[in-house]
Length: 60
Image 1 (cartoon, rainbow, N blue to C red):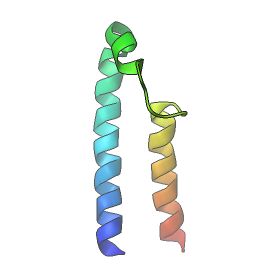
Image 2: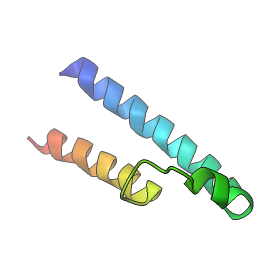
Image 3: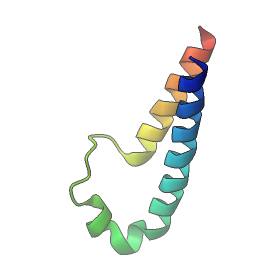
Image 4: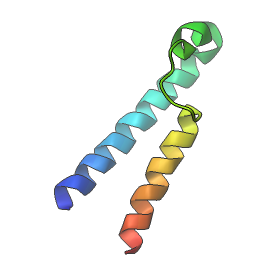
């Protein structure tokens, strides 16, 4: 489980950095980054879901 938790923390960190970069170019490149977007949720919502998922596992 330790390796899983470490990988999840790394994924959250990477997703957070990617989200920051997305925000920087969203106004000028929204047509490109939105095309074929593979998720049904907003990018930030997915990040928050990952964080909440991690925190819920820590509670158990």
